Length: 198
Image 1 (cartoon, helix red, strand yellow):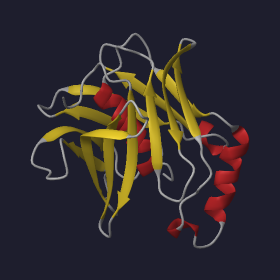
Image 2: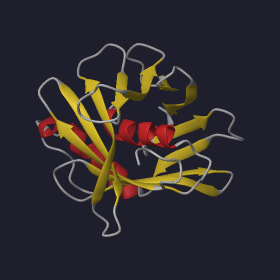
Image 3: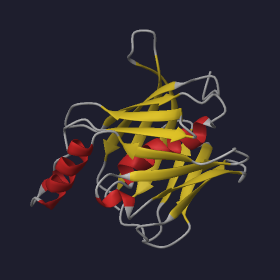
Image 4: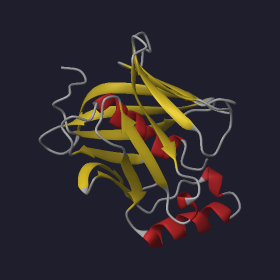
């Protein structure tokens, strides 16, 4: 079936390797477990300009879409999302000032009526996560407490990303807006993990 616009729930799981971060994106089966692999993301570590490529599978033979920073190592960088043919799908950016207390992102699709804003659902968890980042050696140990992002536009729900409890980074992406390009939504969901400390 592959990645279809009709799909509204995905599991996103990080797979850590020595030189790169990788993410597996699956549809969700009737039992709530991972079903078909629909995207595989590859992010090189220590890049001066963030660039993540999404493929149809782990063979990395066919590109689905990409996201890339416009600026080099900028905490407020805008990331453009492009389809395999180079068509621009939209963009997202972190709101650095608003993110000091609660991480906030802005997501825009091509031809969309407006911009969706995503923010951490719980202020207490947001503050706890910031304290965790100040502790020594925690970059080697994932933040295990679940956190959640809700994206809304003009008071309506667009999508949400929920981190599952555990030491491995696993997320559930739920898309409420039928018009939101699934590739753009998946790119933003992966960015919430891959770029969260930026």
